[in-house]
Image (cartoon, rainbow, N blue to C red; front, side, top):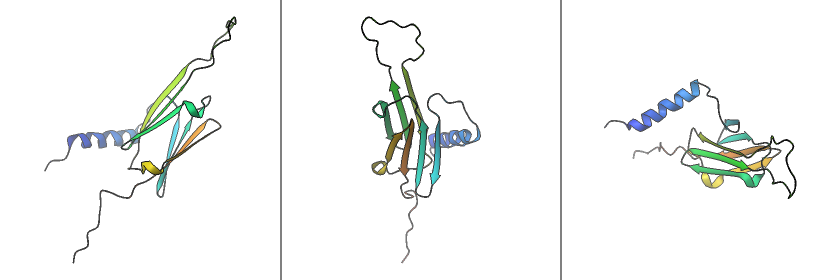
Amino acid sequence: MPGNPFSDIEELLERMSDEFTFPSVGPKVDLVEHDGEFVLSADLPGFDREEIDLTLRGRQLTLSAETDHEELEEGARYIRREREHRGYSRSIRLPAAVDAEAIEASFENGVLQIVLPKLGDEDHHRIDVD
C-alpha cells in the first residue's frame, strides 16, 4: 500500500526547516527537548499575560499576542507617537505528540515559558508472542 503523499511532503518540509534558518516574524522562540518534555521559551516584552493566547492542535502550537497602548485622555494630543498597536502570531510544529492536559505555561519579565510533556511512543507497541 503506498504511503500518504501529504505526510511525505510534511516530512520533507520539516527536514528543510531543520537545514535552513528562515527569518521569523513575531516573537523569537527557543524550543529545547529534554527527556520526557519539550520546553518552549518566547520573548514577549511589553505584553501582559492576558494579551497572550496559546492553542495546541495536534502537534501544532500557535502563540498569539496582541496589545494596544492606552488611549489618550480627553483634550491631550500626541507630540510624538512611536509606540503602536502590536500583534504577533507564530505557529511551531512540535517534533512529537505532547500531553495537552499536562502543558504548563508561565510568563515572567516578558518571557513566556511553556513546558510540553511528551506522550508515550504511540506509533509503536510491543506485542508479546505466546
